[in-house]
Image (cartoon, rainbow over all chains, first blue to last red; front, side):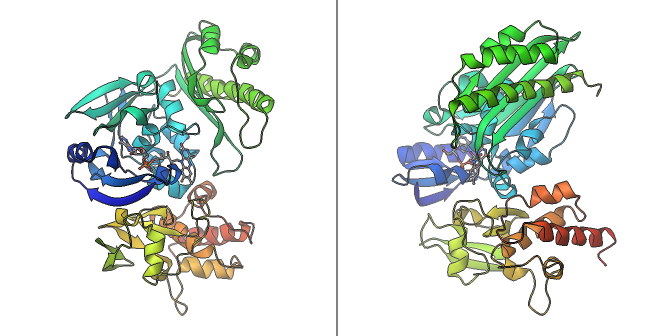
Length: 282
Length: 158
Ligand SMILES: Cc1cc2nc3c(=O)[nH]c(=O)nc-3n(C[C@H](O)[C@H](O)[C@H](O)COP(=O)(O)OP(=O)(O)OC[C@H]3O[C@@H](n4cnc5c(N)ncnc54)[C@H](O)[C@@H]3O)c2cc1C
C-alpha cells in the first residue's frame, strides 16, 4: 500500500469523521505494521488518531476492558489476577513488533496467522465499535464471522475489547507453533475451560493458521463437555476427532504433519487450561 | 512536502518528508544518521532498531510521520569513540562485536531494556533482545556482555 498523505486527528470521533469524508481513499493507521502486507497498488491517505485515549487496560465488574490502541507490549506488561493475554503477547513476533502493533490493528484485519482473533473467540470477548457517533458491542463470534476489515468501513473504528477476568475453576491455554522464534504461526490453538467438581462444564477451542481463518472446533468441544477433566480421555478424544477438520500444511510442511501437530497442540492447550482451572490460586 | 519535528538524541529537530510513504529509517539516513542500518527492510532483522518514546521499533517499517512530536534515540546518541556507552564498552570487552552490522540495533534494544529494567534476568534479556539477529557471534558473547551490564547495574553501576 502506498501512503500518499496523512491526517493526524485528536479524538477517535474526529478520525471517524475524516475517514467518512475520505471514503475509499482513507485508511485508519494504528501501528502501521500490517500495511507492509497490503497490496502496493493501493494509494491511501492514512488517518492517525491521538492514540493516548484508547491506550488503556482497566478492570471492572468481572471484565477487563482494553483500549484498541493498547500495544501488544502493553498486554504483555499488564499483570492482574485472571489476566491471560500476557501469555499470548509473549508469543507475538518480536519486542519491536510488540511495541508497535496494537490489539485493534490485530483484530481489524485478520490474517490466518493473527494471534488475537483466535484468543478473543475462545474467551467470548465483546468488541466495541464506534459506528455513527455511537458505540455498538459485537460478540466475538459475530465480529469474526467475516473478515472484519470488510465491514469496518465508513469511519467505523474498534474502540475497545472486553474479556472476562478468569475466576477459580476457569482456565485458559494458548499454543502457537512457529518455525523460528519470530516467524508467523503455522498453527494456533486457544482454549477456555470451566470446570465444576472435576468435570468440564464449558469449553471453547479455537484454532487458526493451519485452519485458515480462526475456527471453533465444535465437534471436539461437544464430545468433551460433561466429561471428567482427565488427560488420558482427552488425548483419546482429540486423536479420534481432530482428523474431522481439514489442516493445511504451512511453510513447507505436509497436511498430514499439520494434522498430527494439531492433535498434539490442541491437547497441550487443553491441558494448560485444565491445569489453570484446577490450580488453587484465589 | 510536509514537515515533521521530533526530538532526536535530545535535540529538537525539523525534517522534511520526501513522501508520506517515507519510512523513519530512510528519513534518518537522508539526514546523515547512518549509524541506523538498512537490513531486511521488513521488520525482521533488527539492525534498523531505534528507540521511539522509550520503546524500540523497527525504523524500516515505521512510517516517518508517526514520529511527529516524539522522542527518538539512535546509535549516534549513545556514546562516542572516546567515551563509549557502558553497553558498547561491555560488548567490545566480551568480544561480542564481529562484523558489527547488527550492533547499533543491539545497543538500542539493550538500552531500552536497561532503562526499564536496570538489572534484567536471563529470560528478560532474551525477551527484550528477541528482535535483533546476529549472523556472526551465535549470540552467547552478546548475552554475556549484557549480563555483565545487568550485574554491574545491580551493584550500583560500578
Ligand atoms: C515482522 C512482522 C511480524 C509480525 N508478527 C505477527 C505475529 O506474530 N502475530 C500476529 O498476529 N501478527 C503479526 N504481524 C502482523 C501485524 O503486526 C499485526 O496484525 C498487528 O497487530 C497490526 O497492528 P497495527 O497496530 O500495526 O495495525 P495497523 O497496521 O495500523 O492496521 C492494520 C489494519 O487494521 C485497521 N485498524 C487498525 N486499528 C483499527 C481500529 N482500532 N479500528 C478499526 N480498524 C483498525 C487498519 O486500518 C488496517 O486496515 C507481524 C507483522 C510484521 C511486520
